[in-house]
Length: 114
Length: 113
Image (cartoon, rainbow over all chains, first blue to last red; front, side, top):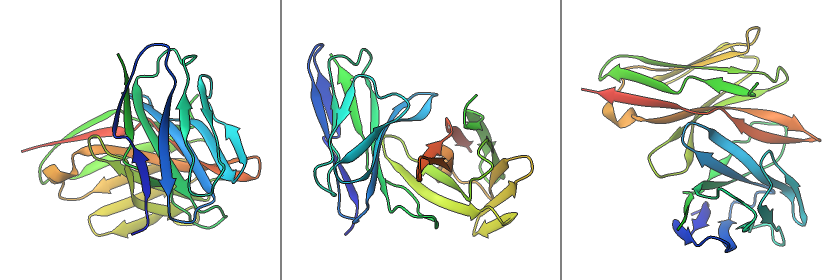
């Protein structure tokens, strides 16, 4: 079955640590996105990538980093520079183009700082 | 201001109709979407509408688009407790030759017996 998989589902981080969230898709999509969701704030774009080996900052990129070495994978690293990392993180992918191309989402990773 | 705006909460009685409203800012948006999010899960596409349409109906769902006012609504007929979720309005924001899915804050729909 084609889909997009995020892991782990729950992640706990100590203050000052970097953590990496995994996102893998087998939909053959070129475009991938990372969003952060906080209660009452909806989805805010962290980073996105339209093609392998290229990515762009979104609206709230500070304290985060990404890589796109393979089409299927778009991992997100939450660095110690991110002062308030506790949130629900969502990865999405879509097939680029001008026609109707919906975004497909993973099930999310809930990150908690302890 | 935000690109996409929605009210945060809606409470309805089971069996009634629910109407969730959204306003967007990008007049060049060709597709507009409604997504549903169950607790602790990702978003799933419910329906979409192309900008040259005024209305789209899909079973219990009706989408109305007023392009002049940049207003989108989602009507759920005969609302059930299983419809309780967060509903997101989304547009495709053009950015540097690509499209970025841009979401509102989401409307929490609460359905009570």
